[in-house]
Length: 340
Image (cartoon, rainbow, N blue to C red; front, side, top):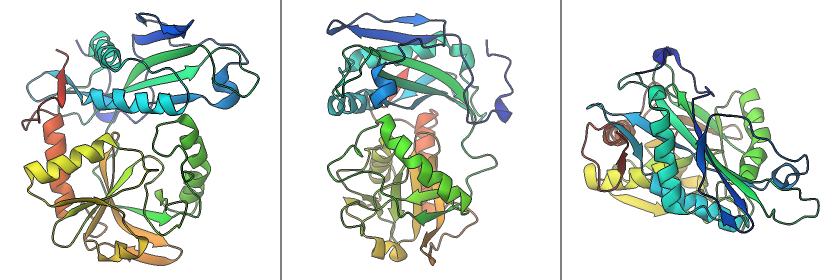
């Protein structure tokens, strides 16, 4: 039985749900973990996460499909990416199979919060981990907490995905050989000033360049780039400091296997942007946000697809991937985990 929520007017914000999963790492090992009712986190004033930002997170969604099933999309990739984040931040890896099981358990315990098919809304899951014992010297924590909560969210775009205007940022998102390739909380803290500054100047997002040479495209604060050439090739930027987006990796397979597109994963230079036909940002929240224009310090790069709607190839990619997620199209093996 669905909760009494106005699904069609749901925003992209936090709505408390009934249950969340919590596991603790103490004395060198993880406990079994459990579903609990209490949404509050209690910790020492000196907890490692509060002193030295030792935390990482993931984001994934559960959907109600056309035939009424509740499913998760590729949670195994979130488990693997979080394991990579933990290793880089000297945190204990939460076992990947248990990560997936815990995600499915949280959805199952909150089934009434999964929005109905066709509403445009979804159930967003946020797995995260942090150092919880007191740490005053600069070193990794000894005890950790792993948690997953979920919250129903509305469509990322109200009234359709209108192309956005972004700018080439003077800020760097990540350092060479830094933490750009993992989902560390500190990466997002670093991007907040840049995004507020962009919004204040009338732009929707930042395009970050490679921190070493500032000639190559990397990503935005929370999404990977996709570009489409005039002959219909999907091009995605390659770099050691780009977060490996699960949506982007899925779109590359969709492009090749479902749409017969040529796919290139390579370095993309700022000075070749003018030659692309379409541009988009891809991520869990919006799937694809079309980009109509990029402002490079007053020099405007306008894509032929224009400012009114998604370009034709971007639309096909969006429709195909969301069709797979919502059960309208057959998914590649292992992509969809059915909860009920």
